[in-house]
Image (tube, rainbow, N blue to C red; front, top):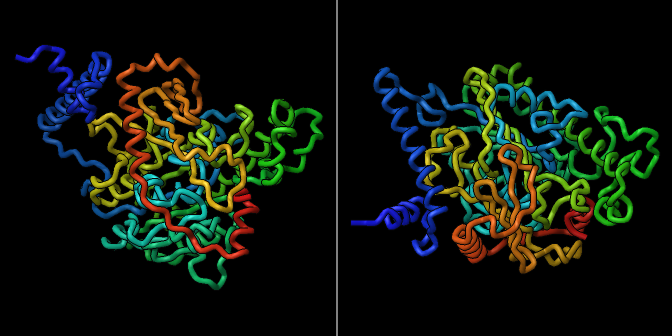
Amino acid sequence: MQSDESSARTACRAASGTPARYCRPYFEYIMICKCDALCKTLRNATMAAISLGLLLVLPGCGGESRPPHIFVISIDTLRADALVPYGETSVETPTASALAADGILFTRAVTPMGITIPVHATMLTGLMPRHHGVRANVHRLAEDVPAIVEKLDAIGYNSASILSLGAMNFIAGLDRGFDFASDRAEDGREFKRDDAETLDMALDWIGEQDGDTPLFMLLHFYDVHSPHLPTDYTPPMPDGYDGPLVDGISVETLYNESQDLLAGRPDELAALRALFVGEAAEADRRAGRFIEALRDQGLLENSVVIYLADHGQGLGENDYFGHGPTLEQTVLQVPIIIRDFRRPGEARQVTETVGLIDVAPTVLGLAGLDADSLPGRNLLALGETETPSVYISEVEQRSSQTEFRPEHFDDEALAAFFDNYKYVESDGQQRLYRIDETWGQDIQPIELDELHESLRIWLADLMQDYREGNTSSERAELDDEAIEQLRSLGYIQ
């Protein structure tokens, strides 16, 4: 006859995969309560469905009459808290507000890395950077790494990758599987284009579609990325401000002079944020014009829009500016909003931690495809697993061309997000933060022993397993022009 403690230890191991020697009553209690609550919820829902004679149909499970159009709108460098649904008050972001008012707002979403190309590789493969091999902006996706677009193509989707950072397609190879990709052909190829041109290209492609073939598009806007410049939507600077940011700030100045020019100076920091949220408001309206075009083309009523960012941006918090090789929360926290236009609008907030690693299984699930082989979760079917979810973020891999901030390139540095905690191993030290139960951008440092020892051991083991699971990275072929372009964007120095 098993004791209560032994039974609880067995339940803990079954739920988490944690070795029995690491399970303690506190952890057992959390896991058993979560499993019991989930089973009770599922049992009650099943009985209600049977008694009412209803057929429950979930998105992406084959209940739709035709597969939906799926549009992923990725706004580069967009902080969640620059959007009104996440707390911004100095500007309006009508697109994000409208999507959140009738869709699902994820308040605690994290990115696997604070840099553009590896994160988009994660969204298109469903794999973490160490597993798909793109760990820096100078890496290329290897041909033997599966891309989700190839699965969509196999069931009849017509797909397009239309990007403001064209280098993601022709240098990093993220165009694989797409029927149309900007900058794939050498003629007219652009390393980076203005978002206005990207929007026009996306509208042209939409206008060419027959309305019957299911569509998948990755639409990428880049203008929120530095340099940070005034727009028509920039809110007022501090009263009487005539400092160095009155006309904006360049990439070089932000990354190389911010500590002397901006750190600890309230007016300069306020001016920097004003520039940033003005750019965010402009990008948000471009996303809105794209969605309105879907409506005009008769596509929107059978569409799902996933509105997100690849990473955030440090605006002086903890004296950190920009993004890149860092585990700062201002860079790792991202917005995700999903609106399924096939259904009546209903606002809903999801406050558990999720991640951009979940985008690929969500897209596949919407298309009715199996994503069980991927590590992420379908964001529209959360709660269907009893396994505790841990999200890992890492630092980009330093390349031979990168001399920028060499002290930040810690190949062992990782952050693990679990429940209401952020656990960091970096520079040979461990740090622990408590995350606000609703808003992921709000975190507070706490003592390590506030997290039970068994959980810390479990997280540390999981993180070490991830470090040891490297896939070799394939270096992209870079000519002098490409190197200069990467340097101008702050990616290499």
